[in-house]
Amino acid sequence: MSSSNRLFSVALLVIASLALGACDVFDSVLGRTDSVHLTGPTMGTSYNVKFVNDNGVDSEQLHLQIDLELARINSLMSTYDPNSELSRFNQSKTLDGFSLAEDTITVIQAGKLIGEQSEGYLDITVGPLVNLWGFGPAAKPEKVPTAAQIASAKQKTGLNKLILGNGKVSKGHSEMYVDLSTIAKGFAVDQVALMLQELGIANYLVEIGGEMQAAGVKSNGHAWTIAIEKPVTNERAVQQLITIGNNGLATSGDYRNYYEEDGRRYSHLIDPTTGYPIEHNLVSVTVVHPSTMMADGYATAISVMGKDKGLKMAQTENLAVLLITKENGEFKQYNTPEFNGFLVK
Ligand code: ADP
Ligand code: MG
Image (tube, rainbow, N blue to C red; front, side):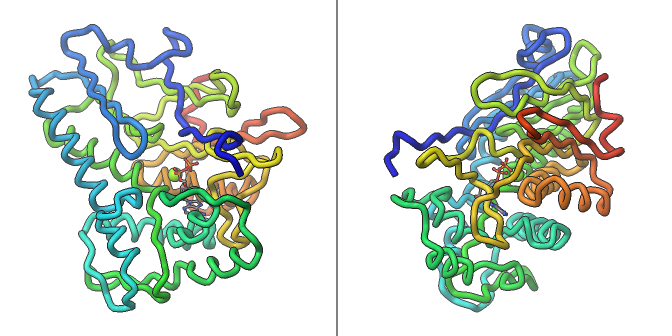
């Protein structure tokens, strides 16, 4: 596989406001003295924090604090940093308990919970398969893996082999590899939002690589309006505008993060039950939930499960979910009743 026929890019939502068309919702707060926009790189993507500065917060100081907090989370949970706490856990071969920071354990617990609710389709131990398929931090494979390689990597996965207790985590197989990529961004959004809340900031939008949390209103008094992008790679167009109240939001979609070989598309989401990248007609999943971390995990879980299984779990867990499928060349939109209130008609 040559690098030229691989297409990689990070899924990003186009954020738009009704008044401004398909442009950044934040534009409407820019240019006002009480509106602040802080941005920077993180987690292989970027973050955007917008807020209405009603109580004179020192925004330069806050910008530094946000960078520090995101660096701290990365130093705990990034699998791209070989010295992070999670990387050290992954490198260790011991089956004995390994002490991890409270935040790392919180994220692992959330991953395990959604893993159980999704009947194993979200699996934070899927790392050996992710890496084998070339979507991890390691070098990309030269060939599509063989069935034998997949079977062997699969042996090293399984949520039941990740045991939590007394602030420690232990492995049921020495070569397990925990991948928190799918919920760490959501967790980081929640942490930054918490920082703003602690400073008394009531009107904000925090976003990292498309996962976001909103609170209150924009400086013009209107609700934060978010555009769900049409799931196409060649243009950026709006599929559906939504307002989410004081909630987190995450979107999962494999239309911008995949590679192609011999005309075949390989998603970065792996079905842990088969060990192969997912292949179905569900192209975009959006979840609104008070916790952005949970929204992030549920969005990926439903993406992996596909429309029917995904909607069934959404119903059992009372989730606010919006799905877009591609059926006979046409996009079709579905949502759970919990999502109705968020749709901008
Ligand atoms: P998306 O936004 O498409 O849901 P995320 O960035 O949230 O994507 O998560 C995708 C990442 O999660 C992959 O790059 C991989 O590291 C990991 N992953 C892939 N398949 C699974 C799975 N079945 N369960 C948990 N994590 C997965
Ligand atoms: Mg996700």
